[in-house]
Structure formats: structure tokens, C-alpha cells
Length: 613
Figure (cartoon, rainbow, N blue to C red):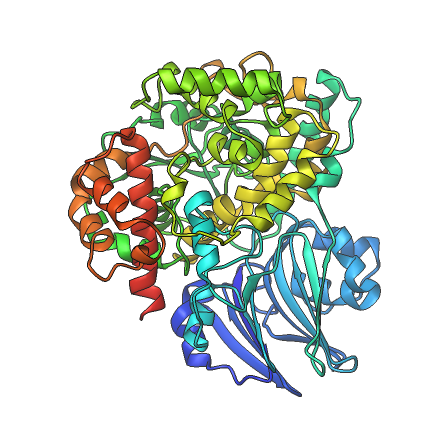
């Protein structure tokens, strides 16, 4: 796991890169310049500590900087009879590129963002993994191209300008859609995408080399028993690869849920006295007793970590600023503290990320298994609109009434608005307060939505496909990458193996949701591994007391930022509406008010602490 930066026709400031990304690679930093290309690498040494130095060269022609891990690299060495001189997956990757070119990507099981310069062809090859575990941002303007693992690095190197259209989009989605960022001339290389940069003409050609949509269009005929057996075998192989591909000890996050429980139970068969960690938070649901059952069953070296938010007021600006862009997901806060605590015990940690997205773990998926709300149905739309207008809003997000109210809310809407209401639901119903008259800020999202909505998919497959493309990389994986790497901790996700990413989308809906039971297949698989009391536990994740934070502990700092006379949000949203939110002078559900104010607060922290710094 590392950080990378590179440029064409631009001299990198290595001091700025280290100042903004040293946490990604504290063990070693090196550079190489060839022609008009400048590469810089920051290394977190995990595999082949002595022989994996980067930038790495091959036969004087290829130069690589690589962020990530190729978990099956030893298998690929044997399969293709690669002649290697180190134990590094970086060398494996270079030899595969020499042999196959861009087709090498099809063989890789891993998380990666890397750049290879060919000093004969005078081209740079950039590539990103299937799910988008590892980030890569590209600045391109006039005769200059610069890329880096983090936006804060580009901001330090370049005089970036705000792209206001994308800020409106952030207010609807909470993150930035696919390749978009808050800056002009800066795009993120999309997951499952590679690009060739011609270093003489500066032309950039991008190609989507992997797309989960293609697998949602396929239909597996596997019945329950077959699907359980195959998923089990694929998960076992994935966990095995992610443990063996490390020269450092690998631990495991262990919650009271089935995802991390499955990973832990399988990992324990490959590593005796596996180090496991469970966290609990002051005043929140304590999953430690359930996690302890798994730890005892598999005799792990278990630690219960009590996380306090006592220092949140002092830490909050730094936590938000780490993302380099407005980032609304408040679970970034516990993720930060959990990673900080885990780093004291291990450098590599396994997690259960991706299971909910691939096997339907979210409660909002249940109604879409019954009905495709994206299809135009005037009866459903009109009924939803009528009932929503006469019923009072919900103030308890965990209640059954809230579930019904949200169901009516998105049933009353159309097209992309349905998805935004069913998902993040930040400013929905109040979006007219955005100062975006005449700006089609949802154009890219609408095109992506239409592509999936017009496909021959069920309602469940549509919303899962949309979530993977809209939120998963930009929100979930970005959150984990920044939270872990802020503490030089590497997170590995067995559910995101190349095989499971290709197999899970093809499974029938009935294997994912059964009645109102989410993640049905994984719950059935869990009966083989986990105590019965865990299997039917509802999904919780990090239970963030956002409403109490906004109204209490963080109320003053939020008011100071969002309500400041020179606040940036005055360019984005109606000031009168913002004032009503801050002073609780508008009739709005308490949870929605908290979410809206938090989204604005994150925007202001980014603007003042990142953009203006």
C-alpha cells in the first residue's frame, strides 16, 4: 500500500508530495525522471520489504509506480512462467504488462492504482481496480498533466479552481459522481478504467476495462445449495490470498455482524491466534458481546477497543479535511478512530466491506425486490404522493413508520429522484433551495441512471447496480481508504475479489432477499461458521448519533462554519433556508435537518481548511 504521484511537462515538488501524502508511504520515498515524465512513490512496506523498492524499472524501458496489492501474483508467476528476481507483486505486474499490455488487468485479483511509463512508446499507462479500492486523480490543462493518489496532493501542487456545478451535485449525492471532483480540470480515473497518456501530444484515451453492469445482465442458474457452496469456496480462496500476500501480520476487524464474522472464521483456518479487534462507542449499541462469541469460537487473539468521541471537537476539521473534497458521510469519524486504534496492533487488516453491496444487505433493497419503483407506474406514483402529503414526517430513523414514510417518499417521485430519495436522501424535497437555475448539474448522473433503468433488470438489480456505480467507490471505499491510510493502515476486503465481483451480481434476487430477510445467501452460509445468535442480527454499521452531535456537542462549530457571513454555501444554497435550518425555524424531520447541516458543514470545512489554505 502506497501513495503515487506523476506528471508530464511539470516538475513535481517532492516536499509538497511528502507533506500531503507521507501517511500513505512513511517507510520510503523515491523518484525517477525520464524524458518529460516525473514519477514519485511513497511506500508502506508490506510485501517483499527489502526487494520491492519503487519506482521499479524493467529492462530500461518500463518504469512503474504502484499503489495497492496483487493478491494472486504468485499464482500468475507460475501460470505464465514469469522470470522474477524479487518477491514483489510490483515486479509481477511489470512483467505481466510487458507480456500482455492492458490485457494484464483481466488476470489481476487485487486493489490497485498504478502508472507505467514506456520510454520507447513515450506513453503512460494508468489503471484502476475493478471496484475502485485505490484512488487516482488526474489534472489536465494546456500542456500539463499531473496525477496523484489524493486530491490534497494535487491542491498543494497546483492552483486549482472550484467547479461550482459539481458542488450542486454534491448537495444531492453527498459525494462526487464517478469521475467528477470539486475542481475544474481534475477528474478521478473511474473504477475498472485504464488510460493511455501520449506524453508528446498529451492526448488521454480512457477505456472501461471492467463493468459490473455486464455481470448484472447475466443470470446464473445456480440454486441455493450450489450458490452457497460456490460463494463459500470463492470467499475461502479470497481470504487465503489476502493473508498470504503479506510479510507482516494480518489482523481482522470483527463486528457483531455476519460479514466480518465470515471473514474472521475463514481467516482463522489459515492463521492461528488471529488478531481480531472489536470496537464500541460511548452511548451506542455495543456489539462486543456478539463479536466475543466468534472470537471465543475460533480462539482469536481478541481485543475490545472502546472508542470515545471526547476529542471529536478538536479532531473534526482534520478528519474532514483528509478527504480533500466535501465528503458528507459521518461514519468517516468512527472509521478514523477505529483505524487509529487498529494501527497500534497491526498494519494490515481484513474487513467485510462489499458484502452488503454484492449480496443485498441494506433494508431499502427489500421493497425493490417486490416492485420496480423505477418503472413508470402512475398508480403507484399518485398513491405515494397522496399518502406522503397527508401523513406527518418521521423523526425516528429506526422506526417502522420511518421505513414506511421513506417508501412513500420515493414512490411519489420519478426517475433519478426516486433513486436519490431511496438512497442518501440529503436535500430531497428541498432541492429547489439550491441556487442552480439553468445549471444541469445532474446530467452525468441522469445518463448513468437511464443506462441502468433501461436495461432488462429487476428493480432489485437496478438499485444494487446503481449503488455500486454511484456510492460504493465514491463513498464507502473512499471513506475506508482515507480513514485507514491516514494512519498508515492497509485494509483488505475479501468480498471484493475478482471472482466474487463477477459472480455475485449474476445470482437470482431470491438468493439475496427472501421475504424481508436481507443478505439471505450469506446468512445461510453463516450457519456453517457462526453462532446462531449472530446470523439474524439486523445490519447496524457504525450507529452515528448525528442528530445529537448537530444539536449538542458540535452545534457551536457547525453554526460558526455554516452561518458565517462569508460562508461559501451562500453561493450554493438559499441563505434564508440555511438560516431556518440553523435556527430550527422550518418544519423538517430532525434527522433530515441534521443530515443537511452536516453536508453543509463538511462543504465549509473543505472550503476553508483545504481550498483556501
